[in-house]
Length: 244
Ligand SMILES: [Zn+2]
Figure (cartoon, rainbow, N blue to C red):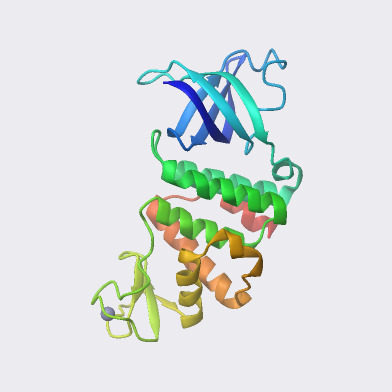
């Protein structure tokens, strides 16, 4: 691997005394790890550019099957400094980053890059909100190929009629006739929010105001669905829930 790419820093760790280990998401190579040699010692070369959730231009070199490439140089494109200064923004950014890292293996996730970048811009600009969280979760599921199926009943494929349910196992809406005991009830308003968010352009976000009740119901369904797909708890979500 050799070349230059834009990238968002998903997280940062240390390797030994001197080096900084980074997990990045880039439009060119998807998720990747990189090592910034000597970055802990010499602050000069990477001054303030390796902070989590920053957008950088990464100059990469080397790397083989199991060895990550070296980050030779990094130019700061957007620091998104409020994502680290404001605790509410910070936990949401951590949640978005952890979710992205959980869904995409190294070498994949290029399609999630524009989404994560847009979500960080919005989080930086307007702060964290349940709306932003639910929108990101749904669109990340789409980017990862796990979009819930919301237009037709997942069992009979017909246009569903109320009362609706949601099947975690089949990943979508269930009509009144196909409903099984394990399905979760889903109101028409929450279904409408999910359908709307799946197609929503981020440009109109400031004007979107779903009913609080429908939004939180849609949010709950997505959270359970995400947990089921990943088959584990998301650490940042626990912190997020304590905070909101
Ligand atoms: Zn059905």
